[in-house]
Image (cartoon, rainbow, N blue to C red; front, side):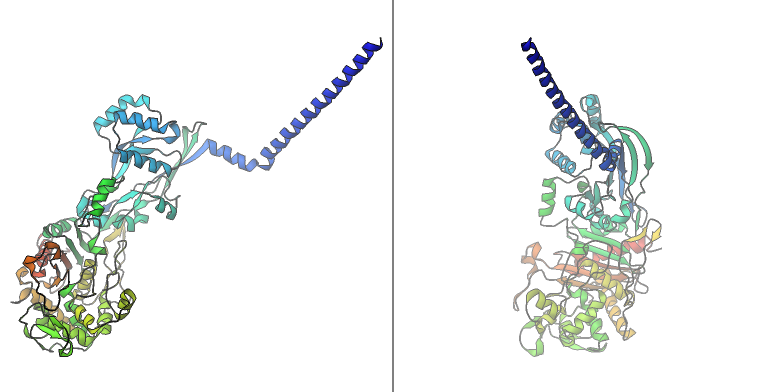
Length: 611
C-alpha cells in the first residue's frame, strides 16, 4: 500500500505546480492585455480615435476653374476647354507597370507620356486620379470603352485643359501654365493648391496667378476599408479664378507681327492716356499649348537651342543699343540743363575729336551735315552734334536726366522678370568691369552706343513720357481684374519737372520734322491722314575700328545693324506711342518706320483709335 500512496502524492504535487504555473501565465497574459488595452483606450485614445475617423471620412479637394483672359475687344486669349483624358487611380491598381503595359496594347503610349505620368504620381496626393493620356479622340475613347472591363482603377474622365486660341501670336504676353514641379511645391501653400496640378509659368499667367487661380473647394466623402467612396456627405464648391481684361489688342498685335516680315524683333505700342499696352510683340514666338500638359524633351530642346531664341521675350527682357532713337532725350537733357540752347549751332564736317585730338568719332554721313541746331540734329540724325553735346554735358548730368525717363530701370509693367537694361555710369562700369570711365565712353553713349542698352518696352515707355508732356504712368497690360479696374500707378515724381516748355516743344518739333521735312530720316511714312513724330535709329551689332568702313552688302545678315524707330501720333494730341526693333534690319527709316506706320494706320484708320 505504501507504493500507491507515494505515487498519488507525487502526482498531486506535479498537478499543483502545473496549475500554479498556468495560473501565473493566465494572470500575466491578462495583465499584459489589460495594460495594452489601457494604453490603447486611455493613454492614446485621442490619437487612435482620430485615425479611425480619418479612415471613414475623407476631405477631397475640388480645384477651382481658372479665370479667362480677354483682349480689349473681348476676344478670348486664354480659356478652359473640356477634354477627355485617360485617368488612373493609383489606390486601385495593384501592379502599375502591368496596367500601363496593358493600356499600351490598345492605346499606344509614348515614353514621354509614361515618364510624365510617373513623375506626377510621385508628387500627387492619395485619392487623386492621374492622367496618363490627354485629349483622347472619339476613336480612342471607343477602343478603350470596349476593353474597359479589363482595367480596374482606369477610366475616362472629363478634365479642364488650358487653351490659347491665338497660339504664337500671344505666347509672350499671356504666357502659359504648366504642371507644378518640385521647386514650386516648396514655395506654394499646398492647401491653396490642393487638387490643382498646374500653375502659371510665364507672362500674365504667372504674374496674375493669385487672381487667376481661384480658391479650392472641398468634398467630404465616406469611404470603405478599400478606400472606395461610399457616399458624399458635404460639398463646399470652389470659387473660380477672376478673369483678366486687357488693354492689349490681338488684331493690332497681328498687324505688328506681320509688318516685321522676315525680321525678328519687337514692337511695343502704348496708349498714352492710360499707359495701357496695345501690342507687345516678341518675334519669333512659340506655341504655348505645347507646354500645358508637359512638352516633349525633343520639342523643348529644339526650342531652347534655336539660334533665334523663340522662348525669349525680347520686348520685356531684351537689351539692345538704342542708337539714334535716344537723341531726342539727350537733346532735351542738354536743353533743360543749360548745356546748349535751342539756337545753339555747331558745324558738322563728318567727324568729331575730343578737344580736337585723339580718336576720331565718325558721323554716319561721312561728308557731314553742315551747320546744325538741335532741330536739324534730330531730323537729320547728326552724330557729331550729339557727340559734342554728350561730352559737354558729362556722364553725370547725362545719366541723371535720362533716368527720369526710366532708362536703366524697370518700368513697372505687370509682367515677370522685366530687365533693367543699362543706363551706364562711372559706378556701373567700375562695378561691372572694374574699369574707370573715360571721355570716349561718354561720347559713345551720346549716340546710343557703347554701354547703353535699352529694352523695347523701356524705349516705348520713354517715348510715351516725352509725348505726354512728361506724365509718367507705369505701363500695364491688364485694365480690369474681374470687375475691378486696375489703378494707375503714377510715379511719385510724376510729371517730370520742366525748366522751359519751349525746350520740350523744340525736341518734339524735331521729331515731327523727322517724318515731315525733306531730308528727314523717316520721311517715307509721311501721310495726310494724321501727323507723326518719330526718330529713327541704327544700332551697331559689332564695333568698327577708327578707319574701317561698314560694308553692308558684304556682311552676313546676322552682322547687319539693328533697325530702330520710335514714334507718337497724332502730333497735336498723342494717343499712341510705339517702339520698333527689327534685328539686323539695317536702317530704321526703311525697315522699322513702316512697321510703326502699319500699326498706327490700323489704330487710327481701321479701329477708330481709342474711341
